[in-house]
Length: 305
Image (tube, rainbow, N blue to C red; front, side):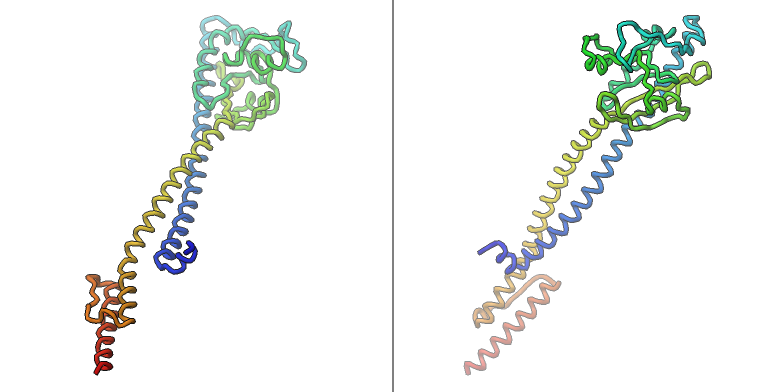
């Protein structure tokens, strides 16, 4: 007997199948809604962490300059130096390197706390830039020794360059507490760029930029989706299995009554009362079949006489 025929001949199988389809549909809808919500929440949480990091970084960067000025290590004019001096030996076309009167200070004073932000697995870089996009001190991971290979050096040694692309300039000149942009980096990566303004002695100096990897967030989202699918798949399997067992158990009295009615229709076991402890529909059906048994027995008796 084929499965289709077995289902067509079994009320329990039909009910179980319909309930299973309904349960799977509802589970799929719930899984989709929860997955979308969780993935969006993950992205928003990461971006909020980036906003906090950018605000903290901007304040620390400004404090470094303020402290150095108060200590007499640099002057306000030094800090706002915009006469970028080309660094010899780094003539990389449109991506040269420059010194300023304060970059030696930032090399010593900001590198440690900038690198600290990169302990977050989704952050690509965390740096301060002046209002023209000049980046005096990049993170350690982007200050790799020069190799002479321009393509490797442009991605591995990115410090003391001016990043005056539209996103870089917007981040450098932004005066809002937080600015979120999509950054298409010249290395081919696409990421979120979150920035906050840096102030030195109350004057806007530039911005602190924190980059968030879209690829890493997407990877974590895929991992979360996989986990949720597995969980909901297991839930659906258990639910459907439980439904089949419950329906199968609930249909046992119906099956027994069907067999009893079949025997009565053949004139068999007319002396055996059909009983059920149930007071629900099964109980009422049992009483009806038992009355049928009594009627059949009476009819058979009359026919026998």
